[in-house]
Image 1 (cartoon, helix red, strand yellow):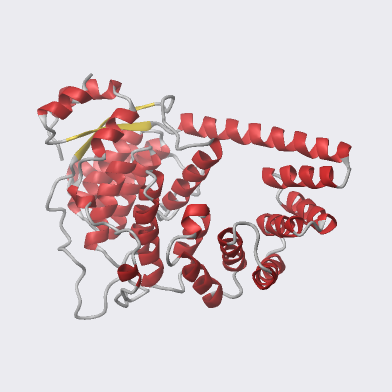
Image 2 (tube, one colour; image 1 turned 120 degrees about the horizontal axis):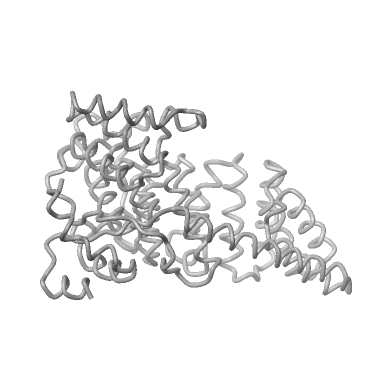
Length: 416
């Protein structure tokens, strides 16, 4: 923990933009060095150690790397919160939304508190009770963790992150470290979050969710190679665990699907989880994107089979029908494409791409009025989603953080 006297030191920092702080942080935490090396032929051949899937621990006789103590203090301090008005994006609005969706998915790996699903729970009373209990037992990590959960529910993220940190310092267990990192990630502080996740990964190398969160942190910052390495490692811990593959699937873009080992991971997912609709869907979309939307006949037939299986397993899988429509449109079979786009928009009304693709297909067959209607629906949905994303962005306060042990030159730059 940092002394109270640091509050004045960081007063000016609260006026700095997230852009400046992110630039400073990118050169700092040595903990991140070597975490999830970029994919190479040598790293692809590495075999992971087995683990006990029930406990997440190594086999008997093998200890996790590092002792369960947070020896070194974090290299950052959360100095305050601000709104997200100046929060920078990463490319297009669609890319930014996808990045934010991945972040929310990573945070969802956090274990919900017992009261998390009870909207009528009196958090104010719980906060008072927890603080009274901590007066008598200030080193009780469980109490600090419960108080952190409560403060987050009450809309006090600064208090929450400090309580999560205190719980992790008193008891650096895998759940405590993960929840501390998740709180930082939630409030748009990926670099400090990654420092915590990196520490968690070193202490608990068989924790898949720690690797997943670390991978998402790298992806948020555009380091796709390291993001993939983290998720590949997570999938190798327990190949039958669907979680890492689902994150890989949601990260798909042209660069990522061509990375060494990506298609093999998606193939393994579909092979080990043949009755999982998303396993079949993501393997199909990986093959399609690797073929640059123009697969040869055998590959196209395989993709079609996988997608048909996916929508058979899950008739509400709108993206599955959408991809089938894209496949048929590429063959210029517009009646089949239209039928699948219609099915996609029916089961997933908020899927804006289905309306855009349907508009294009109608235009190609001369249905101008229908094309204009679908295009208007697409525009309305796009605007609605952008507004919702912007509202969510403003509702989540952003942590303002600063580095410890900075050089004078760095501090001077930061305070400008």
